[in-house]
Length: 206
Image 1: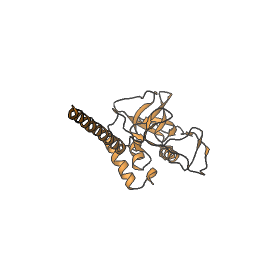
Image 2: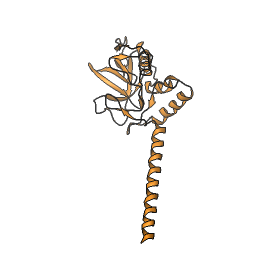
Image 3: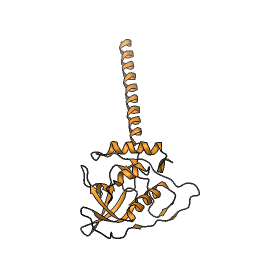
Image 4: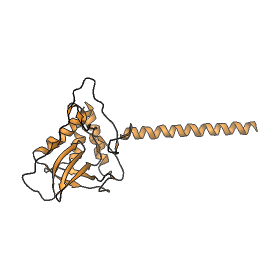
């Protein structure tokens, strides 16, 4: 009887150890993939990392980054009316405003009222604004899902010169990879660009 109890305790101990090892392994994979530490943004979407203002940083009233109407129309392209933040823009489609969330990338958050001009979230926002300012038109490419539960369009966004905005944010180090299945068509490419940006100390990795 005593031996049976001892064998039972050993079996329970091994099971617990295996469970702990499995949890640690899953945690390591999630960390390496950019899923940890996790949080929810103000809009409810997953975001991997946040920013807190540096001590003594100067904040300003948040500018609204509206864009002028494009001088020319281009087939398949929509005018961009406003840059919301690094990974969200507003376009006009059929006379209506429409928010577009860039798939697969996550920029640091930007507060609603006051911003630190030197924060990585605001610098990512300005990076997008400056790219669009001269020719505010974009083409959209979709993945498995066209919309999130907040009614935003999910897309890979292309500039008039055919460069993908999602890729540029990753390449210049202003975003982290954000994998939300099933919209993961370019996830591996984005992960490779993030690794290069880290190695090059670009953007948020400086």
